[in-house]
Amino acid sequence: MTQQEEQLWSYIDGFSNDLERAEIEAKLATDAEFQQLYEALLEVNQQIATHLEIDEPSMSFTRNVMEKVQQEIAPVRLKTKVDARIIYAIVGFFALGLVSILTYAIATAVPNFTTKISTVNLANKFDGLLDPTVIGAFLFINAILLLVYLDSYLRKGMIKTQKKGEL
Image 1 (tube, rainbow, N blue to C red):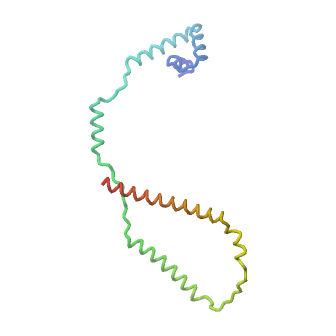
Image 2: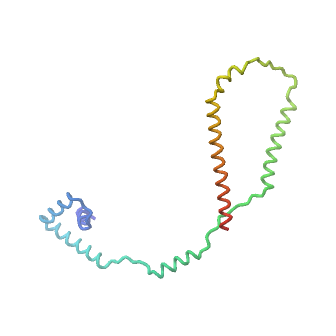
Image 3: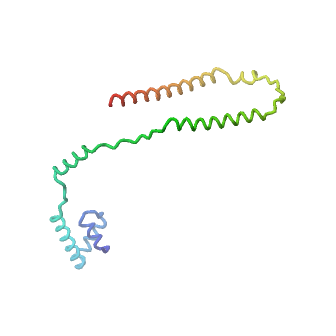
């Protein structure tokens, strides 16, 4: 398709802007070959408009298809069930490993060690940190976290009861 044909199709379909429309109309008035091409494309457009119908399926076909879709069994979500013995075996393996490492560490440790504990007065350092504002902020944040946790816990319970009611 040439550029002239594209311009004419845009003009015929009404997709060209005002400037392009003015240029095409001026060219149609002066150029005979362009005028012939325009008339040929206009005739093709009219034939397409008269002979081309959009095929739609009948209402009964649509209804039949929708009934078949409704009759289809909805796919069930697969729930894989893991045997509890496998989980217990894995947990037991890791627990046994940790206990054996801890036992080895205690058995090979040298029991006579000495430490020097320094006498640091921590009471003086923490007195400035525990003022009423810090305690209030700490309690406020904990209260918000408690409410968020309680909300999520109650929502899970409500969802479970709704699912039981549907079954």
